Amino acid sequence: MRDRHVVVLSGAGISAESGLATFRGAGGLWEGVPVAQVATPEGWRRDVGQVLRFYNERRKAVRAAQPNAAHAALKDLEAVFRVTVITQNIDDLHERAGSSRVIHLHGEILKARSSRDDTMITECLGDIEPGDRAADGSQLRPHVVWFGEAVPMMDRAIEAAKTADFFLVVGTSLEVYPAASLIDYVPQEAPKFLVDPMPSGLADESFHVVQASASEGVPRVASQLRAMMA
Image 1: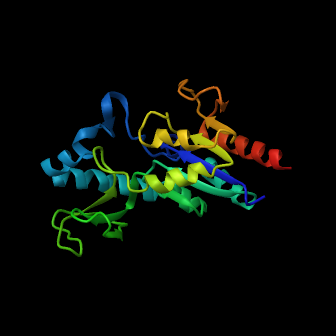
Image 2: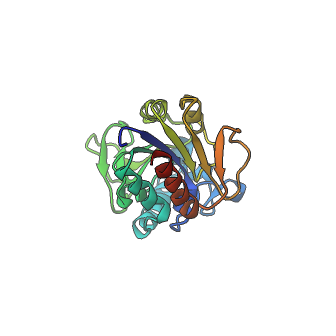
Image 3: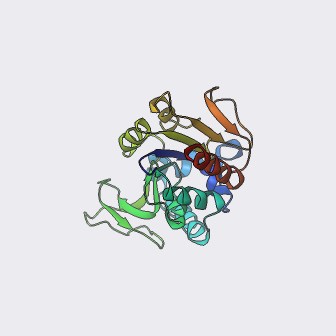
């Protein structure tokens, strides 16, 4: 059955159960900081130090977090299916759970890159400070995609969505674009599942809705997928 392709679109809700703050909280805040100050090119130009301090704290939180049952269930599906995880999250919890094919739409907090050349990427497990330089001499910055920047992995994600035999959405409101547009590329005949404790209604009637948290709902969907192939 491993030729059947399960494509997963994951968002902040799956990481929240591992203790990581969701990207956009009440009033457009992320950990109490206005998103525009730390997640835009303008915020970077205005105060490099503030942005670096903010992501240094996020990096520490990610390293302290552990994958949860939802991450584990997706990894376990690889025993039966070919699984591609397309994630809006910048943490590495899918990889640490054992998922082997992960596409990060919005970058990876445990990597840094040149602020001049977005292809010059290095591993980054510690802090980035003002004055830390990439190989091209530019200031190192977090390898994350900010508002107003291109999403370089989008083409790969679209190609994965086009080949989905099953499509699972978990931990995301389907309100953030371009990621939300991926559902438009999923083959019409592919069953689609939405795991969400409070479904917003944005998913159309073609979705099988599982009203549950990620750690409860993803294992449930995984069992359904296995049963469909039995």
